[in-house]
Image 1 (cartoon, one colour):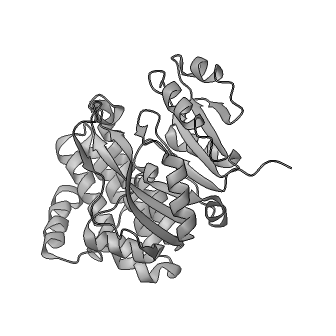
Image 2 (cartoon, helix red, strand yellow):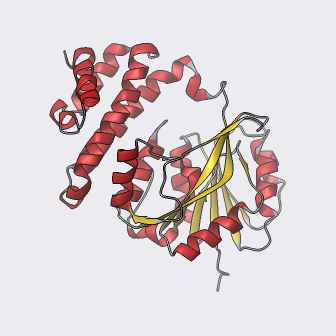
Length: 314
């Protein structure tokens, strides 16, 4: 019989030689829990694979694949993980000491399906920082539908994967997987996580440092079109989810949130992307204006939809 594993830590990596060794060694220094660290090397061309192969700890599981993107990498890890709980990390960020131990303690005490924590936006020095979120129902538990309603009402949707500790049985029961693609699919994962309507617990424990990197791929000029097209996927899928009969309770909030993602898309469309005609055509093919209108709940929303009509639909 295989020993019980408390937490599966899933880390997709691509050319992360500068950070991945330190991060994995830090995780493996945890001795109070039974863990596995699943690192999916997504076609790295630097020394990432060499660094990982040199770590002999049996708790480290290496998966190698051709470059398919972070979401495909996470799906590959989900397919083989064995832990009771799942945590997603990025290869270049930092965590507090006791990160896994304290998260697991909170999640188990709350008997939650999903526990959400907090973190810091910071730079490489970690000296200047601000909280990732401020308006969550801390020290409370809500079902997923109520959380969607809360986030939409508060205009704060903390979808980042590294905030989450998720019960594995909840992932399997609801057949949750990442939509594969280049960008923004963590938004869909989190919405589907909440739409499944399990029990969510919220802690204002800031145990993760999200290090902003102006040189990252998401800020490259040639990546803005990819991001815009990914937003179209996200908006389309949110609207499709809102139309399902079992989601009557959250239909309006989901459509309101689709408008939020439309604002992000339009920001890229107006200032960043190169091929506006292709983005405009795809948006019109995938997204029905009548569904967006159904999400309008304020004058601000109405004015935005009119702007969207002028830029995209006319």
